[in-house]
Image 1 (cartoon, rainbow, N blue to C red):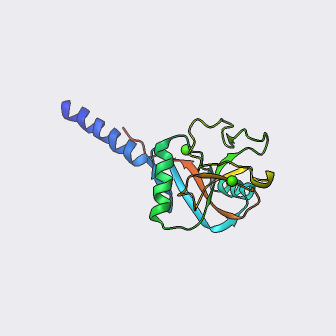
Image 2: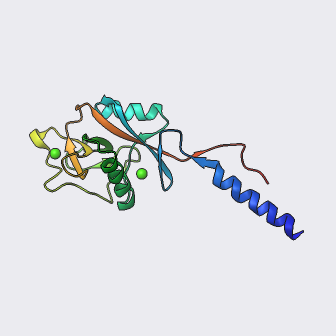
Image 3: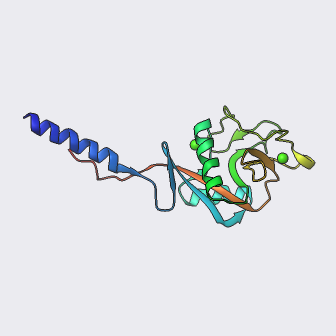
Length: 161
Ligand SMILES: [Ca+2]
Ligand SMILES: [Ca+2]
């Protein structure tokens, strides 16, 4: 009996480990997958829609750990572009919130003197090239790179035992 239980436990463990993964081309951190989209240059609104077609959202950064993961990826990729994140104050000036969940920010990594709402026309946030990928606000109509985030994909039908 003991060996049967061990087999069942092992099977269950293997099933859990193999049941969650990121689609090809996406990068894994914690419980999310990330796509760094640089083949398309889109406005913030267009980028939001583009992510939705991938069953994802513009990235929502809830922690220092997630923020560091994203910045390290961009440093390693030697990209020279800014990337939209899912953060906006387009509805109430100065009141930034995450578009996906409507949550106010509880972690922030604004570059010095940002967000500055330059020309009273900057309502959408990026990981800013030139700011070592700390956050900056830009005009939402800029057409630039962006980052999509989705939860780990679960493969149904894999679980056994
Ligand atoms: Ca997130
Ligand atoms: Ca700015």
